Length: 222
Ligand code: G3P
Image (cartoon, rainbow, N blue to C red):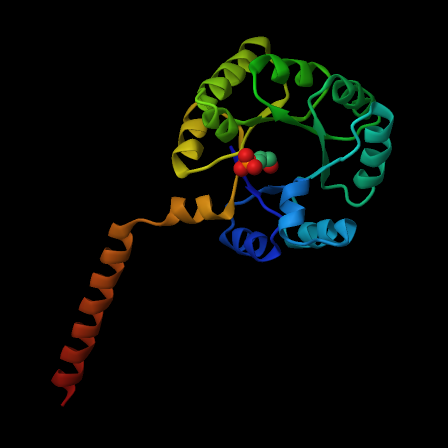
């Protein structure tokens, strides 16, 4: 399975890339606005230099023609760009036409297995299920992920289910256990996944004992 970072912050992407566990990046207009990005093309190209994996960039047009126009332009920035298209009737039409042009699509804003199925049939490479936002309305985001993963397996659908809107490490773990092939998460969740108090305590103890041993050696030398 692959882990992506859901961020447009270059420092976070650098840190994730250095750890060697992050295979791609997903952005959206909110994440770009959070970083105050003025030049989207330049920023996405910098991300590609740091992490040359799939980088999702979302279109802002809402009509099919506009989405395609934007997508074609964005896809030219780098071979690593995957165009995020909202899963609406116009979006489905755009996905199909972009597939014909060989442009990879990440179908976004998916909240049900049926939306995921339609996006997959329209040719999306990734289908992004916003599991945290599903949980927010007291429904079960992981259930939607599970049903979609099962559906794609049973039908032999090649599109990749991408668990997005991840809020905590349990989302990542459970999506992975369900067989979800891609999970995108904020950098804070990656940090939470790594952190364990017993690791810190254990390291502290090893270092203290090592210092004691060094002191004993010094003493033995005198
Ligand atoms: O990238 C799309 C998705 O991950 C957004 O998550 O936290 O805004 O629901 P969130």
